[in-house]
Length: 249
View (cartoon, rainbow, N blue to C red):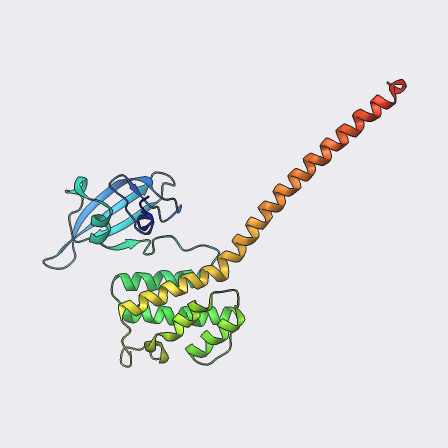
């Protein structure tokens, strides 16, 4: 049986279906609501495309240097996604609202900077996320790596590999992020760091609430079963009493 799960990581499945970044539904139908060419530079034109999810009604924006609309019928998912260089939301899924707003804003900015190849901005946002995460969890340490190690100790339920990934990028050993002293993080390193942060934040803020929600669902189901059983027993006992004491009727 073929495994097409890789399509879940794309925006567009084909010319009819895509993975909505807002309602997080897979393979829903969409419509192109508006397109427009504008001049990116003096001799380069860019196409902006607005796509509306036909499930939740939200619109996302996509930029491409290619004219994917005029040859749209012949495109598959790989063709569409490979020609789009920037999308809003910049991440495939809107960042979960259970993650603190400050961290969501920085993460979205880091992903946007990386999409546009603004590596200094993305690097500063990544480091700022760690600082804010350390502050929220009262992690100790004067430097980046000290905070990461302290967070790792404080959050044992989070996979330690995520924190190890943040520590093992050599470019992160310096606290310099200003233009005249910037060490030059590469795009591939930033992608790894952002992915690790996304997973770590999900483990810290989303998964505990998801576990609690599922636990509560199980408890609610159990209570409904117990209530139904008790109600049935009460009805049975009442019927038996009426049978045993016919003179009372």
